[in-house]
Amino acid sequence: MTRNGNEYDVIIIGAGSMGTSACYQLAKRGIRVLGLEQFDRVHEFGSHTGQSRIIRKAYYEHADYVPLLRRSYELWKELELATRTKLYYKTGILYFGDQDDPVLKGVKYAADSYDVVIDTNPLTETKGFDHIGNIPPGMHSIFEPDAGFVLPEETIRQYSKSAQEYGAVIRYREPVVSWSEGNSGFEVKTNSQTFSCQKLVFTAGSWTSKLIRKYIPDLKVTEQLLTWFFPQDQQTFDISRMPCWFISDKKFGLLYGFPGFTDQQGNFSGVKMARHLPGEIVDPDKRSFTTNHAEMELIRQFVSAYFPKLRDAVVHTKNCLYTNSPDENFIIDFLPEANNNILIACGFSGHGFKFVPVIGEIIADMIEKKSTDLPVDFLSLKRFV
Ligand SMILES: Cc1cc2nc3c(=O)[nH]c(=O)nc-3n(C[C@H](O)[C@H](O)[C@H](O)COP(=O)(O)OP(=O)(O)OC[C@H]3O[C@@H](n4cnc5c(N)ncnc54)[C@H](O)[C@@H]3O)c2cc1C
Image (cartoon, rainbow, N blue to C red):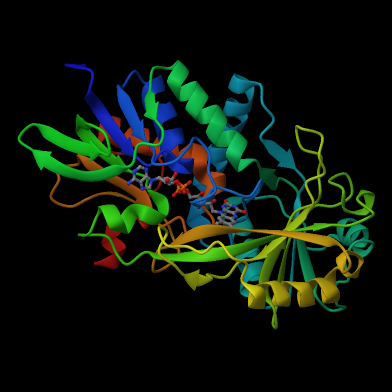
């Protein structure tokens, strides 16, 4: 369908987590797709930096995500097989909180609604956790065995490489500066040239509101602190002994973390943890990248209370961006008045990475067929009207 070198069927603006997966799915279907990315293939300026992302199915945020997660798990497996790369580490996850805690209640509700396997009295796992952490007596726990973490940077590398093998063109260090609708499609200007296409997809993460000013609700971009603890005794916190976890605490809020593991270069990853609560609102183009000391202090206090063996560990930190929709659910929809030719996938609100493969598939379905069989109605724009 190419008419000249700069004309495409579809242009994807933002080739990060969701954008590269969409490029892959579209190219695999024989659609001529161009992905435009302002930075490098993986980078530290958006939402995908930080080594690991939790993946789980008993979705306390909203049970309707479970069917999407089922499909995502299948697609993670497909990607691993196709690229012969390990991207998913099955560790299980322990949720801790009071009996009436909304996270624990939400986990049970999603598991009951969709038959997700969980253990609501996980004595073996919590006993193992006792050697690592210091869980207050009376706290309840749930174990979800089919959970773990995925590798964000490696996933994006593999998707972009595979997309290119299927014929997608992905241009890096090429920021989109403007876009407009013409008589026969769209024109997209980058810092160096102009492209045209029939359909446009916005997967621009924290920059979405800078590119689309009409129709989308307020997206709050917040800076999140990630911390890594490097203890002397790495064995205690190793993936062979420790699952991922969520701890919902009245004083500290909701924290989550990962076991340590040895990365592909043979280095110990550190024991990573963070608070899941929108941080300070920032402009993604005007960030200081400094550590939020108040947040760090809170995490230190949490570590003293819950993980005393990590108290004296060396600490490393990094910042990453959440793009929060008003209800913290994703937004996947066509923009009104554009005849199903402009699709947006944004507002992943700090919990989107586990969905990367299925979001790519949804985008490809909607672009190719104007709709998808996957149940995404609850993520449409109409809920904000
Ligand atoms: C600290 C932290 C912890 C998280 N933990 C988890 C977790 O445990 N589990 C989980 O499932 N999810 C987690 N997430 C969420 C997940 O990482 C995000 O939801 C996901 O990465 C969002 O993907 P995205 O494609 O919207 O954004 P990105 O991956 O940032 O991609 C957007 C891309 O668009 C590009 N772009 C923007 N504007 C332009 C332009 N004008 N021209 C060209 N390119 C442009 C950007 O450079 C960027 O590469 C976490 C996020 C953070 C920050």
